[in-house]
Length: 156
Image (cartoon, rainbow, N blue to C red):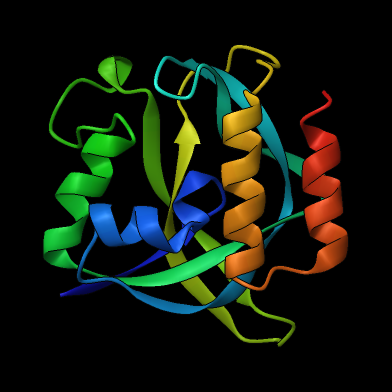
């Protein structure tokens, strides 16, 4: 069985997705409307806040749409701190379906997306994390004006 997955954070990077989900395919740049990029969860690996998407009328989050194999989900869930069989309060992120628009086209798709379970307000991301997101956004061909907006979001 295959799944679609919408990534908006460090999983934009090809190298990270290859490590986590070697069976994945990049489909296209995609956008999640009526949400905004935020940094609401402290992370020790990245030494600062990591990405989240929050409902925000009129805003848009761009990301990468991937096709995953069934075997890709467990390592991706583990990386995101999500255990679908465990108690919800033990998860850092929750995974749920969203509707994304594919590229600049009117085509839509249902895709898995991770949301921070308990956002902690703005948590400043590290320079290393910022660079990873900008690198991934450029690799996946996200719009230049969105990449600039993404860079500004790091300033809080």
